Length: 234
Length: 185
Image (cartoon, rainbow over all chains, first blue to last red; front, side, top):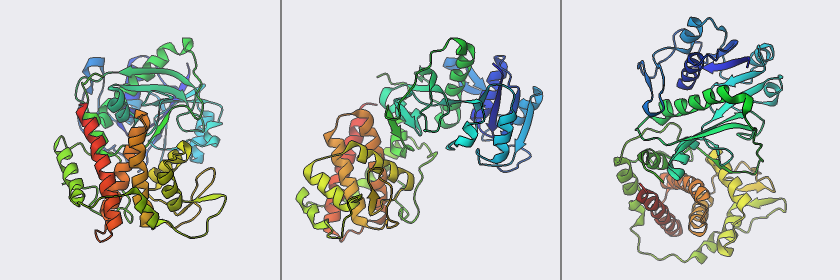
């Protein structure tokens, strides 16, 4: 599959690009959203290997997205914006090589029709089992209710988390892990890589707007209950 | 110390994004925060909420939130779609407006300082959790209940007796559901 990728300065982008390359899935081009026009990326932590031991998936938190792209000679456009629906991004997506664009831009943004109609499929990995878990922080809700976490690969559509489902996977997390910065990117990455390995043989599952439940940003009390339930079986 | 009720959340809405993990101590802080409001011995008859009913003009194509919540609670009739929409509106804005349009439940007014509505919404959610067994919905409702109760506590005036009673009822339900979830750990 010929594809491009939208990235920004976060652990999900680091994990996606490092592991896609590691597995031989090299994007034809990249669009890098640099919200603050920073020359050197902010680093949450300077760890060279973080991930989930039990699923043998890691990324180097110390290596910036730009460093990875440069090391691998991937043609990159750097755009200074926080708005994914910016005209420049729409134009770049129209011109991007390939039929698909992997999305790892800033979280919480809604892709508008002008962007969705550029003639490519936008691949998104949602951190929840769809259509049951739609919305925000579903990773924590799923761990709390079902004692497992999941990710679903979908094509973006106008309705939030309502696009066709291409692949979904569930994981039991036995080791204590920081969900926000490590667990979430890793689970999404494993699911994304699986999608690339199997996309030719996948069955598409369509969902209705009314299917499942919509969750909202988790309250700290529920977040604590969720984190402390890691390693507990249902 | 439980930090989510320390500032006026009506003036400074709390987003709750990327909240820090504080370990088991967080549970103690949370319970301590709620227990302050459970000391009153006054009994609560649900019919008392009729006192909050407003005689203001109502329109056919909208709901007057306060009156809608009172009717729903007293008649024990919960419209699932309206409940989901009200939760969505509250979760996104952290406000409750006096009027919402029908059927899409969009705000029909910019007024969001009717404090009674927040107490009634809290009571509405607390009763919902007690009456319905869908675990997914219960957790979604519980999440909003925690947030609306944080907001209420952040602005609570203890001189209002009915508000005290509603808050006590709602917090008892909230703590009960918390204990059920904690028991599963």
